[in-house]
Amino acid sequence: MWWLWTVPALAQHASEPQPLLFEDQVDVLDGLAAQTAWFPSKGAPVSIRLFLDTSGGVQTTVEATSELTWSDAVPGELSHRLVGAAGGGTMVLDATAEVGAEVKVDIGGVFTGTVPLLRQSATWLDQSSFDGLLLAGGQEAATVGDGLQPITLSFRVSVISGVDLVVGVDVVPQLDVALAGVEVRTDGAGGQGVQELEGGWVDLPTDPQRPGQLGLSSIWATEWSSDLALVLSPSLDLFTPVGTFTVVQFDSELPLATVDEARDLEAFVVHPLPVIEGPVEAYDFGEVPLTSQATWQVPLRNLGALAVDGAVEVVGDRSFEVFPGDVAVLAQGDDGVVVTFAPSEPGPVEALLRLTTNDPTAPLIEVALTGTGVAPDGSGDSDAIPVTSCGCQSGGGGAGLAVLALLAVARRRR
Image 1 (cartoon, helix red, strand yellow):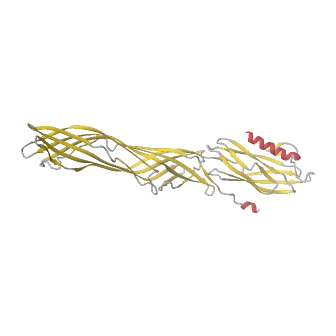
Image 2 (tube, rainbow, N blue to C red):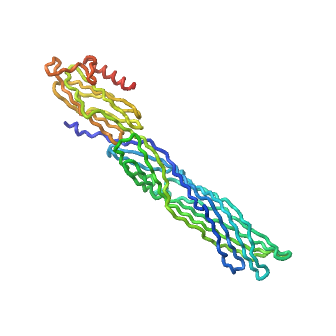
Image 3 (spheres, rainbow, N blue to C red):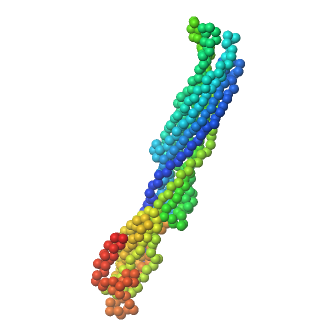
């Protein structure tokens, strides 16, 4: 009975890769309104007070692929991962800002007053791309917001005849938006897996209900941070008949808003799976004369959404044979193989019909085969007919190979 312990070769299988898209919109600048105090101080020769209104934010999109594999070595367990496409992540900043200011001037009694500067509007646009899902082992973070265009405010007023005062303010936005990945949590019907490494695999149990497809909900957990500050560069110039004089000019940074938060982005995919519906657990050919053979057409059905592929063999007594040696059943399709029993000696014999497929929940199906050879003169207790197929009468034993070939051709034509 050595054949009962024969170990079939183990194989690796995979479902069809599925694309997915993560999307997020963070209106970090929406509704941000601020009015500053007099800067640097109300009693300075030149001080400025700023008014700011902003709207808009950052849109994030990430293209990724969901991969699902399994091995015959671990029945009932799937391996899953998300792989971010190279350059498939983008961050787009699209915001508008309206800036207004008042400038207070006190030039030693020559000119004292408050100058209202006209409001100016600007659009802040920036875009960056990144690789992967920003997890450990890959690109650590992505940023956007560098190099935004300044907003210039200016106002000219006549102080006395021939002398003009020009007040200007350059408002340079400094926006630093950073995005980092933390993990990917994937939920299936059988449980949850957590991917912490870029391109790393996680284990997912299969659904005990053996569905023909597996729906997966993946949450990309991220950390988001943004800092908005304005660099103010006010200047005061006097235009006189004898020349132009800069009264004051300085730069100063004014922090406005800081945001730190966790963001979860969700996407859903469906992976097709093969689901084989095998035959009975045991089949008995009964008594068959030594000059005859019996056949059994073994039905195979694929209940899944992915093609079933595999191999079939008989392990044990050589009186049993199977044809063909491969299995290929389309999604939601039917097929089969043919097992023959042609005893060469009288007495009972047995073997195993072994079916190995890419079904993740049933990679190995075994059917116990039994039969008894009897003398052709009927000296045994045989009621067997020359050739049987599911109990139906067929041609004589001398035509056994031809019948087997015809059955195989018929199977392949379905």
